[in-house]
Image 1: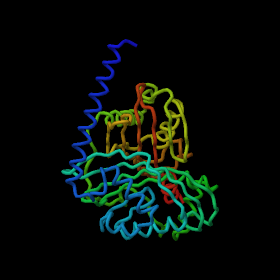
Image 2: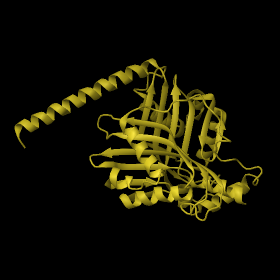
Image 3: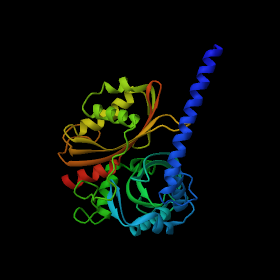
Length: 354
């Protein structure tokens, strides 16, 4: 390697570092004005820190402070309003899984002092099914699964949330089946007329956060990829994904390569071929020591009128809430994480078909 090339590469690296440092300085100054506790260094530190406080340090009472009184928390399985119900659900989970850890893999975020913040927090959770609870009799089994939570925050408080946990990964590790689990859950909740209704446009509640993300090109690129795939342009995968891409899909699936990405997105789309696909929130970010990355919250809404991921067509009207993260490298989309709740889809199908 020539001395001139080495010098040029060093100059580029220096300019990038200065750019990142200046960007971080401005973001941190904005964060300091936004009413967050001074113990948090920046917004990702706040998100990771309060998660650890609440779940691992057992400071569950801080949810009175960290979550607004009228927060709307949407998960595929239900819509919960108010921090008191969040506290009850948190305690129930910790009673069933007392050693649960939440390992923050990434926080992809947007916003600022003027608009409020939105974090897309990807978590790897470990837990032992030590006590009887919503997942049935205690099994003592060790679990590992992902969660992605989109949280809107201002003034040191979360006031809107979209939360997806990999329910299929949980129940599979417990030796259960997604469809049967959904059927059993309906019965445990009082039957079809009384059970908790899954998230749909009908059951959703509008919250205070109305943002749609940012205009960073990496978020726009990932949104374009998924829109093209959902428009049946499956050639977008070899065109835009790295051939050695690493993929993490619902059910704890870990896959690699173009064929696996094609089969996943094809299987989803073919089950709901006429459903409306919508990207509802889009973030792109570039940060020092991290690859360019993106976080999308999206939905698929329509009839289960095709063969695919959910078996024989039933004609049931289905709403799927999904959140996806992606990292990009020199050869395209390098890593992808996708979550939606298959058990919530089965619950919708069973409630409509009997």
